[in-house]
Amino acid sequence: MQYNTNDIDELIGKYLAGEASPEENAFIESWQLQNDANRKYIDQFRTIFVKASSIKEWQEFDTDAAWSKLRSKLHKPNEAREIPLHTPQRFLYLRIAASILVILGIGFFVYRGISPTQTKPIQVVAEKQTKGDTLPDGSGVFLNKQTKLTYSYDKKKKSHVVKLKGEAYFNINHQDDKKFLVDAEGVFIRDIGTSFNVTAYPESNTVEVVVEEGEVLFFTDDNAGIQLKAGGKGVYDKNTKTFSIEQPENNVLSYKTKFFSFSNADLVSVVDALNNVYDTKIRINKNLESCHLTVSFNNEDIHEIAQVIAETLNLSVKETGKEIVLEGQGCENQ
Image 1 (cartoon, rainbow, N blue to C red):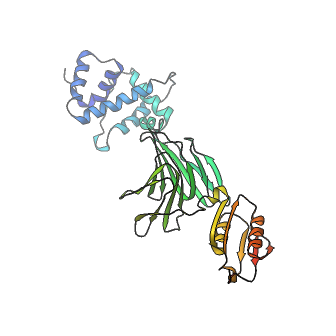
Image 2: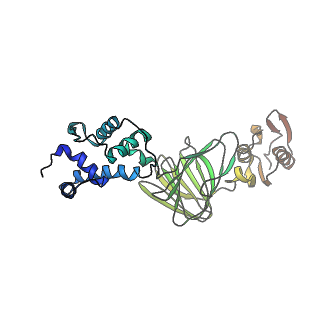
C-alpha cells in the first residue's frame, strides 16, 4: 500500500498508540531511518506520549483545536500541511496530545521545567549590620556590612556557586564530589576544604582573599591565578589583571570576631580599623596622628575601647551623639 506524506502524523500517532497495522508499522520504521529530521520528528511525538502516561483522568476538551496548536509546534511555518482524518473516531493519541496542551497550557515542551538543573538562587544581604547565615549546602557564611551574596547549586555540574559583592567569611562544608566556587564579578575562588575571607567591593580596584584553614584556588577565566594555603593572602588587581601574594593584616576578620591586635600601630590606623566595625565612630585631632599604640581588644564595647586608648596615651574623651572625640597634646615625644 502507498502512503501519502500528508498522512504521516496520523500514522505516527497510530504507531505510538499501538493501533497501526504491521504494514503501517513497517512504513513508519522505514520512514524514520531515512534521515535525522524524520527521527527527531517521531521522537517529539514519543515525548508527548511518555509525559502523558502520568495523566489519570481525561476530560472533555476541544481536541481538534488543541491538536491544531500541537501541530503548529511540531511543524515549521513553511512545512504546514493538511492532515486528513479518515474516520470520525478520536484516536487515543489525539486525546493525549490535546489534554497535555490544555492541562499544561504552554505546549509539550513545558515538561523541561519540571526538573531544573539549577536550584532557585538564594540571596543573603547585610546592609547596615553584619550578618551570619548557613547556606543550603551546610557551609557557614558571615557577611560584612554593605554585602550581598547570591547562592545557587547546579545539579548537572555538581557545583555550588556564590556570587559576592562586598566582604564575607566562608567556612565550607567540603564535599569531594562537589565544587564550591565564589564568583566576585569574574574573579573566582575555588574551595579545596577551607575557611577563608573574601573582600570584593565593586568600587575597589582589588579583590582580596585570606585563607584561615585549608587551601583555595584564586583565578579568572583567562588567568590560572595562584593557589593559597592557610595563613596566605592573595590580591587580584582589576586594573593590571594580575595576582600577587602578600602578608595578611592582623585584623582581617575583626568585623566578624571583634578581636583587634595592634603592635606599635599609628593611631590613625587603629581608629580606622575600629570605625570599620563599630557604628559609633572615633575621631582624633590632627596633632594625635603621630601617636602609636600596642594593645589588643577582644569584643569590647567601643566606649571602653576609647577609654583604654585615652588612658594609655594620656588623652581626654568627649562624646557627641554617635561620635567619640579623643583630644590631647599629641605624641611628638613618644
